[in-house]
Image (tube, rainbow, N blue to C red; front, side, top):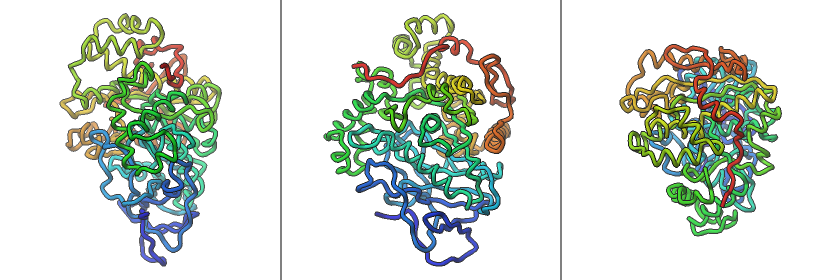
Length: 516
């Protein structure tokens, strides 16, 4: 095993040194912040720890250099625009945290924001340049933490003789590390906000429903929540198919005998042909994503919507929202923009629209849309927009407070074809316009003053929420349904996707079943 950071004896230099529960770490001064990278929060999940719940990290002697991001967890090649870390260590220490802080003074007690990356539960890593948190930490005068968690087969495959949702258990372990150590970095463990986008937002929603995460955070921001949570039966069936792709049985013993980087090929191979399984896997099949949180009855007892409606998030403030044309990103990346057929629209409506009359409801509500527009709408509604809206409604139904938003500002990349697509909020929140997905969405160009102003507004709202529980606009309720529109001229208005909302009114987002 190669460590993600070297151990340097003695104290030493003007570089910031902080003592964690497991040992001392030395970071760097960067742009007025103290930055620490690659601090292990759990033992490497290899050997006996493979496919197991995360184990407490062993203490070390001396001072550990926290200069480089830990290695990414094993994963597929990834989505266009999501780059590898620019400076990451090698080895098996996948479970590491990174901290940006204005001042590692235990007396400071600054609010803490903890980022959970997305990537369809199969790709992603905290060392991605697009998640550089310096702007958030500096502009908001708070502490920001990012961390790695297991994805794909290692984190989410529902294999026999292994705990479900290992990726979520990694997230809980990272939050426990924050609880136990963040005061030494100048943070307040009683003022923790978790935030994430896409699969990261799905993780945030899952954490709201998980008893093991209770008390680990006070506030939550869920950006573009995907509605895909698997039933235990569906997840086990998919795991059997995943193991078969590798020529193995779906047991921890069999899979642990194979290098984890080899198993990513099995996930990629199955994802490419999931549509063939529609008769068994239903709505999960066309997503090309064989991984999602599993409603297993133990780690994740129920769906986030049921949990929040029953009051699980009553004591947690929630911001949740989506982008106006979420699925446009996947049409552009897949080369299908402008090529959608009427047959594809009919198939998508019959598979995804709610209720027996869902197709007719969509055609009646949107009579003048093109095939491309209708396809984008039903995909966006089913996968992101309506699950996100219903999360806010479940939170209010359970006696909690929720704030809702919609991002409508269009991305300038790809000649404007991307519109307000999925993922656009990431570079706007972090101010990373030329890194990773930002390079695609902003065409690799310097941001305009308008983009800079919107980005600053995002950060001001997110950090104000982390500090006070109020992002700066009215709370959502099912009477007025007020949401913040994030655009060049931000406004507060009634929920703008009202026609879609009415179609989905009363629909319950349940775990996806095994139907074959």
